[in-house]
Length: 429
Image (cartoon, rainbow, N blue to C red; front, side, top):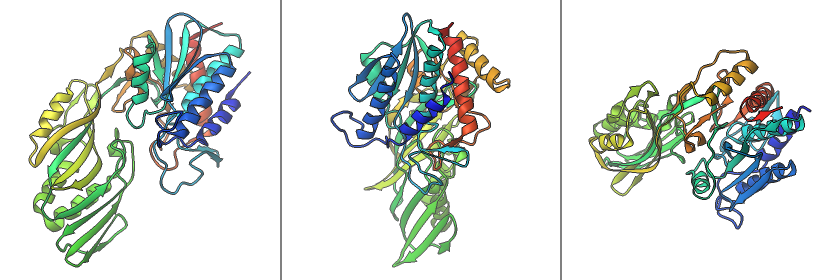
């Protein structure tokens, strides 16, 4: 009994539920859409004989089997889906692709893992441990869901999160979202951009006292009126852990301001418009990778220019060191860490890594190797957990961007990889 078609159908039903965090409701602190998604997966698992728990709208867990706890951790909430899409952002199959916010991050992968388990049970396989699916409702905006789970529930001994990349992510760099208050240039009236620290800004605007050069370009426009310069810029969004994959609209504005007004604007451009963090004196690199720095949110507040940075730092670097270096940057008035995750590492020789990697390589016919990322997945909520898929190396990432999508071929291959992985880690005949 091959259940891929049923997994696809369940995914489409999940995509149709708008689960961007909303106003708290009676059923969830994260909004009605999140609550509907949590109830959906709870019901799907219960109908297949799983024991379930609805965690006050923060999370749902569903388990089967006995013994040590193996966790598969993911989330049902999504980032917003603004912009003009080529298909319905709440789910549509078009031209051989599945479109929808959450098809890859993270509704689709979690549904595929769950249905892979359903299929193995129907084929007569039995879990050799307790397999528990943990669905969070607040991964994109703070991790309150998984924090609540870890406070109230049993922590899995080992497991994986299908919320990253294939082959296997065995190392995740440290994450720090830091509010840095700079001294505002006297002539800067406003500068606004960004809604989430972990998204590269694709739309920004500014007003500066003084007359700059009028510009009418594809990425930046500047209009001079009544002694002021009004600037608008567009860029390309990307995940904050890979700012080099995007194009920050704020960079365009600061480049223009540096050229036309110089002084403090030139300094800000040098400090902020460099994804390596070199301009802020925090650039570092080790075997886990190089530091990355995304300007995620920026605005003027009183005499301050408030900038929220999304920083992914190497494992050998402590968060306190990042904070200390930022506090010494010229023009910085204060530094406040708002959200962070310490680095996470599992040795590639561990059976968990070897079994998952073997499943991936056998299904895809490749020779992939474990690697490190700057992203933060639920795997780091476990002492012994890794991120495993759903993005294949050959796929163009549309996560956190408009037109989030996957080809039907890749989506099916993802299902097959999870099916084989569960055979090797959780189930026996």
